[in-house]
Image 1 (cartoon, rainbow, N blue to C red):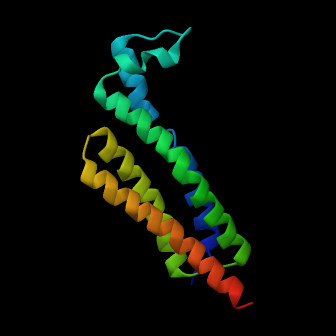
Image 2: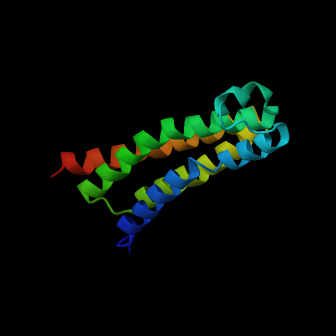
Amino acid sequence: MWSNTPWLLAVSLLAAALLIYFPYIFVVVGRLQVGFDMAAPRALFEKLPPFAQRAVWAHENSFETFMPFAAAVLLTLFAGVSNSTVAIASFSFVAARFLYSICYIANFPLGRSLMFGVGTAATLTLFWQSLAKLAHQ
């Protein structure tokens, strides 16, 4: 039944990589509001509206969480784990990271923290499933 799990993991990995740049849409909107200096793009940070500053932080955090998730997905593929837990965990990570960015940009700290926790739990689940399978081989 879970024969498509490798495909789902690959799609989740691609979606998570693309989600790194999702918050940057809001950074661009903020930069359009305050102007854009091609000679010093990072100098604009202090001038950005608060939602755009939070979008920068969400963007940066997305890089930080992507690396462990990518490692967990690759280990899961290497171990050949195909079950509902892995499918749910990979989907949950992507959904949580999307909602994380929304909550961060909207300045909803509780939602942001909860979604960070869900994403972290999903990554740990993938590692656990992989290591458990490799231990029994």
